Length: 140
Image (cartoon, rainbow, N blue to C red; front, side):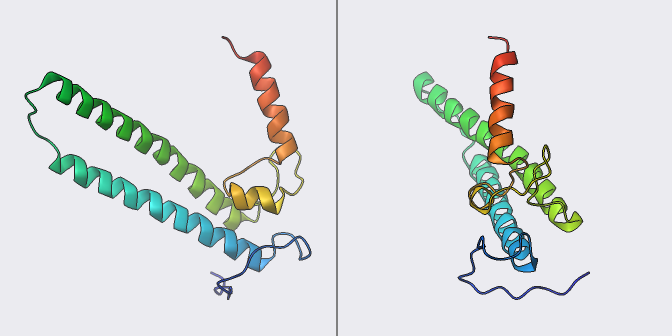
């Protein structure tokens, strides 16, 4: 295991430094871990709220509204569960030295894109091509 990299609190990756140097990798690792922690905390809060919110509501409209809210919350948590898997995959890519490079072209993904979407696996251009192909081949 390698030593922890010192990273100033105000550090932001810059284009004029070597791509995916130790500081950039540590920056994105911390960003991903914080994001993952927030999602897991929200999930725990949801579970606790749902445990405490189980009650018998006599009014059918109120009951339907509460069940709809609960279904929406569960759908959101399911999406976040899938997001946690993508965050874990990004953390593995950091550990394996593959983070920040496009899966399709092998070229570096822009720092701006990674800062906005740290789980990105494709450069913006490759993602756009992928989405255009997907749109052409989907069944409506």
